[in-house]
Image (cartoon, rainbow, N blue to C red; front, side, top):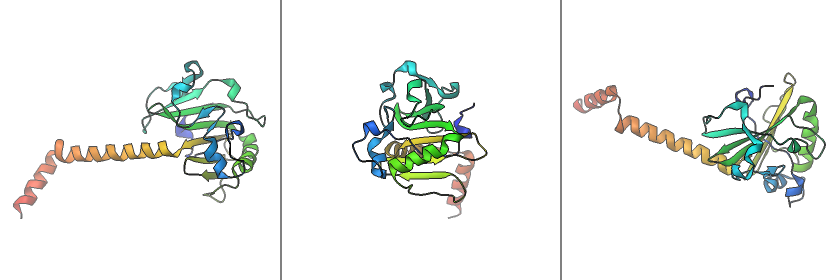
Length: 204
């Protein structure tokens, strides 16, 4: 199976980690308090995972558009969830070596089992953007969760996202865009821009 991120619809979600959470399950606060899955913690340094258990996802070692690296977690012991569900792959996305996403790939036949568990652990979803599509979102200030699966696709995917790191990535992209515009206008202006500027000045 090809797990390339370009083929995955944008989603944000996670799976429960009851052993690491102190808040009683059944609300979005439980999602916020857990902040991870199977011993993987959002915001933690990627070095907290032994290097021999990580490989580049799809053998792609290049940074993506958000300056993140994507890994596959090779430890087969973490693929089995508490409810007996067996995941196909766990992916990890890191920004400046900090874990910003945990991706969970599962068989479509297990989708309702995962949805049921999410409802038990995190309460009712905070929004369902499309009435006739199986996309469910749970949102908190620290962590965002979504679930996506489609009838015509054999696999589903889950992404557990750190909102603070997500905001940091967005801010970095905005600042980079601002620097690029400044350089284009003042540091390395295009010749046509200079002509237009001089023409405007002469017409005043």
